[in-house]
Image (cartoon, rainbow, N blue to C red; front, side, top):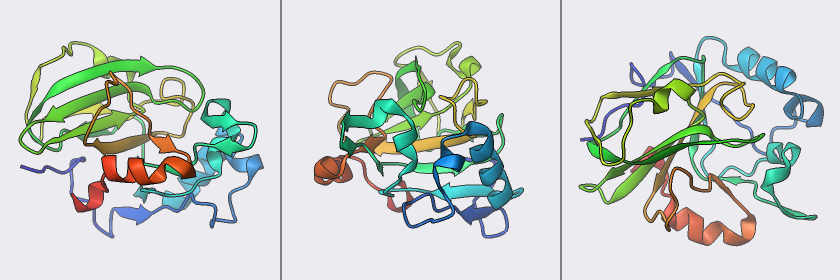
Length: 205
């Protein structure tokens, strides 16, 4: 069973497409390189709605964070999940029956912060929930059953979610490749073919 991520289904009345790609000329280093300016930009754009989008989006915003650089001239800048931008504390629900695969805090500027990964054996897929609240990891254990529609986590504040405006990074993964509590959410262009195959579009799954 596939369940919605939020309390209500996303519709044109409560959500809006948010383009953070290189095609968005409104974005520049003075905005995405400053957390207060970036938060203000997101808030002004989405208003009271949920801003959604980003699968395989080429984003320049990662160049403000050193951990996305693979060399002096190459960045991991292709986004592999869908982001949902809204208010910190917003509850998020498990999309399908499964078990807790792993969880941890991924620290550092631009990283996931608190992260939960579920395994859905019946679907042959894993789901990753990033940029959460610290409290969401309390009481979890590997192998814990999780039901579709069960409240799983919440959007974290800027000081716990890796320094981003509050949002959920949601990603599907076919093969975890041995990762625990973490998995690349962004890749470089040279690795896109592999990651696009291993991380299908959540909107069409």
